[in-house]
Image 1: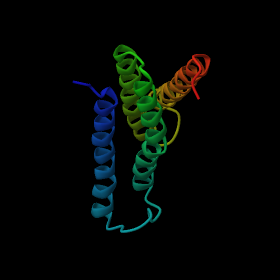
Image 2: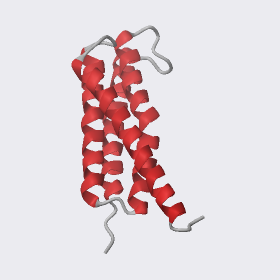
Image 3: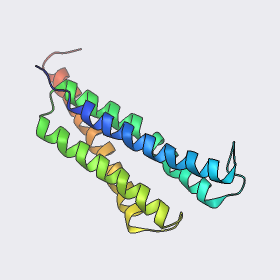
Length: 137
């Protein structure tokens, strides 16, 4: 039986996506704002927190799936996936509590997210180069 580790982190990302979207919907309903943010800073911030996750999730999950398909050991996949989820939680909390300004969580959330993206990109390219060296293409 093959275990798709990326599926676990895609699922966790999906749950986080719904949680952050729910915050947006809740604010929209309470302030009776159907579209945009009508200048409501709390709604604008909640939208930005959700959007930032949506901007980063596809590339991280694609890179992770490619690494898994190439044979990256499960231990490393879990390391990347755990750091990814922790980073996104830190970012969401930090951006919210910092109200768009500097916050420890926002800083480390972004930094760790970028670290995961860069590391997975390098891993994927390394697997590609190794494939070429073995006569692939």
